[in-house]
Amino acid sequence: MVRHGDLRMIVMKFGGSSIADAEKVRRAVGLVAEARERAPVVVVSAHGKTTDQLLESARRASLGTIDTSVITGYHQKLLSDLDLEPTLCDDLFDRLQGFIRGVSLIRELTPRTIDQILAFGEQCSTRIVAACMRSQGLPGVAVNSFEIGLETDSRHGAATPLPGIDASLASHLRKIEGIAVVTGFLGKDASGSITTLGRSGSDYTASIVGAALGVEEIQIWTDVSGVMTCDPSVDPRARSLARLSFEEASELAYYGAEVLHPATLVPAIRKGIPVRVLNTMHPADSGSIILPESALTESAAKSIVYKEDVCLITIASARLMSAVEILSRAFGILSDSGIGVHMATTSEATVSLVTDRDYDEQVVSQAMNRLAGLGTAQIYREQAIVCVIGEELKGKVRILEEIFAALGSNGIKARMVSQSATEINIAVLIRNAEIATAVTSLHELILAVPQSLRGERR
Image (spheres, rainbow, N blue to C red):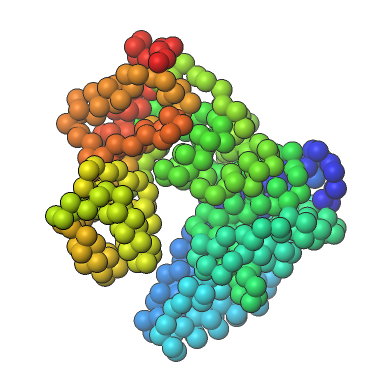
């Protein structure tokens, strides 16, 4: 079904929430049927919360408890509700049980083993979705991405695809007679071990596959109508953005927008392929399209996003060590500890670093002990980054004043501020407890389009 050189070819990726039950699976299959003339390649996540359930079963097994009943029961009900062959995934269930039993025996759970266990989710979903497609008259073919050339490094849990895999992926996919239903999230390293691309990595898979095939468009089908102006669960006034640039979307993903995996856009950018975010439950909604170039709006910015549960680390040198030296050594220590840094600011002999997430107390404690050798080191947990993003920010002289005023009027003091060199984002560090108030007040700012910001440029 994959056609070489057909500019109407598309990739359709369906997330876990979009195929969480029988009704949603049938709905997704219906969308594929409607797009059949565009030679779709389908990429799927694990059904519903299966990945979380697999991880929990693995952790419990490491403590001696063997139980996969929730996972097998959920998939067996799906098969029954879809009137599919009840034994379709039995061999996968048996292999999963074997892995879980092995973990319980050695009481050890390595990143490599976790990847092997998590892989069962996508392997089940591809079989079920492909079988449902066949029951509806579509030639669905379940395909494991790790068997068709999606090769990665060996960084289990956050693997990176190897360069030069496009030709092999495209060649394998073009040989498939039917509509390929590909496992998202999964790859394989040089030793043959299954790897995972990080949480929400199915988006990344869709982009990798789309780039390899040179498709017309990559569609991300989810449970929201595109990229929103803010989290609608925080402010119900949130609305979808019709269009944004690759750069804006990349910043949104980096600073916490859950609708896209942070790495999703890299292959699409490389090939200049549009990415469209659509709502499975409301397919008539136009959603959001992500293109190389942005379209300016009348708003002060496009979106407000946030990343919660990060840590602020401050280091002040008692020996007047230069900020450059402190920063260099601090990055080395944190890298050795496996701690990522999201933001950094410096003064003459002080640096402030914001981690990309929270970390285990033992990991943090060991890192802080080493950082204390550089000066007075302190850590503040339960922090959050709130970021205002949009091409509209460029050249706006008074935007920082507007942001501080919006936060200050609600009693929120930013502990740290950062703006990108491209001027399309402004990030502030606040406390977790202030997220809702901060997001709502800043969302009000971009919805209101203050007169002082209209057309103002340096």
